[in-house]
Amino acid sequence: MNPIQSFLSRAFPALHGGALAGAVAGCVVACVIAVVILQALPGKARKAVIAAVTFVAGLFYALEFFLPANAQDENILTFAVPTVGNVTNVLGGMTLGLGVLSLIRIHGSNVVKVKSGWENSMLLLVSMVVMAVAGIWYGQTLFYRSLFRDVLNSFDAAMFAVLAFFIVSAAYRAFRIKSAEATLLMVAALVVMLGQIPIGQYLTHWLPVKGSYLSLLRLDNISNWLLSTVNAPAQRAIGFGLGIGGLAIALRIWLSLERGAYFEAKADES
Amino acid sequence: MTHASDKWEAAFLVALWSIIVLVTVITAQRGRKYFIRRIPGLNAIDEAVGRATEMGRPILMVPGLSGLGVVGLQALTIFSYIIKTAAKFGNRIMMPVADPALYTVAEEVVRESYASAGRPEDFDPTSVYFLSDRQFAFASGVAGTIHREKVAASFLFGDFFAESLIFAESGQQVGAIQVAGTVQTTQLPFFIASCDYTIIGDEYYAASAYISREPTLLGSLVGQDICKGMMLLIVVLGTLALSIKPLGEKFFFVQWFTIK
Image (cartoon, rainbow over all chains, first blue to last red; front, side, top):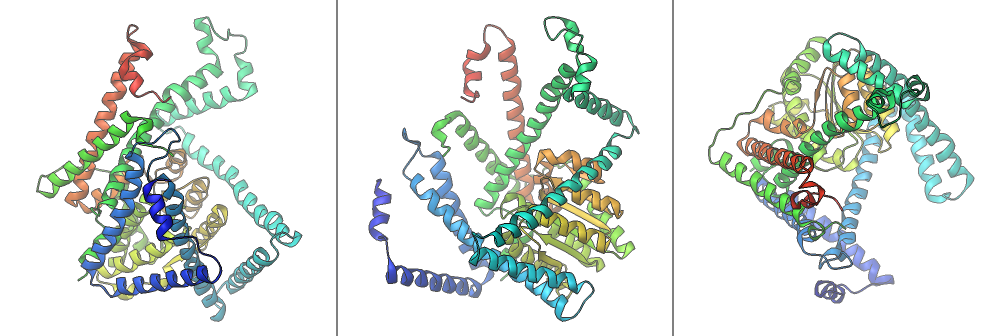
């Protein structure tokens, strides 16, 4: 146990029973007070607080990455990573409640005002309640499994299946020969598709697999060449750009240099 | 866990690039002017909003399955600009969200965008709504919205996966002008096939700089380009080293960047 870990263990010993409930209640009250104070602060002060919290949170992960690790691939901060992850999960869990409230607000209003399509809104609200009841109180029963596996998963699969038709229509549009680029795209796609399927491979199966220049003309070899020598570098190049772009925007958010949308508006408040 | 000590060379590059980006940001903030090339997909935003105004139909903005991270926040920055433009013309907007954490921020962004456009009274709280955090439930909800509302313009920015084509093809079917951008390279071909304009690769992260012309963001963008140039140089040197027989895989430069 490293010094930080032992200090935290002494400062926050494991609690049970009433003490644990009291600590949880205390944390909830502290969070509510923190939110109220944050709301009451003027815009610039609030931005400073948010910037400080963001910086500390980012610094934790930056230090955890840059500090040297031992043979067990751990450093002085690694032990806290799951706990910090749990904090993020708790925040995410709280926002899920806000999402559900949004659904109830919009669809409840549709039902109460008998707007067009109110029956669908009613069905959604009833389904939400039934699913929640089934999940919370009948989690291991056939009732819940049937709702989840037979109904929800089937709907998911049906929606996924729609993709097959959309791929055809999108491919038709993409492969229409309107220009030199579109022609090149269509020929490349045709070769790759033929190279992946048995009938396509059969067309050039009489050519040697390797050891001769003729093997370069086999459809499966051309297909592999297109995928690994033409397509993969392009994908990697895009990946490099995205990685560096992600690094830059993460730096801007971490150091509160970001501008536009939420960030700028908060800074401008007085 | 991944640590810098697993691969010091890579960690050094991360640190170096971070410093480069920060230096260019600071020089831009001190008044140095930087040029940014034209990005057609972002220029098309005004065209799409104008079309929606003429048609009197709503504008749809979808952040995909993005959570509250850099991708989602970047999507909201782009949407904020779209909303400000739409607010001037009184367009109706719709923003279904799949991630509850992003939903809370998105609602704030939309409200503040209307306020900064001088039309706070036009903000409709029901225009931003949480649909579902399940991929295909969200997809069916968005596709339904596109068909019911016959949206005039559709902006797809954020993290998209298999549902991307469902959104893009639904938009095609109702004749919407579509602008899309994602960091998921596997979804780019679908957007290119179905959308009018697609923002590719790190253009996605350049969007906020392009739209706002804010010196901080322009400086960051130039820093990114310098880093990309360095990356290109590393690739060229590595290719040359591997191609020259006496150097080959054992050459120290190649060894630095070999994943073990």
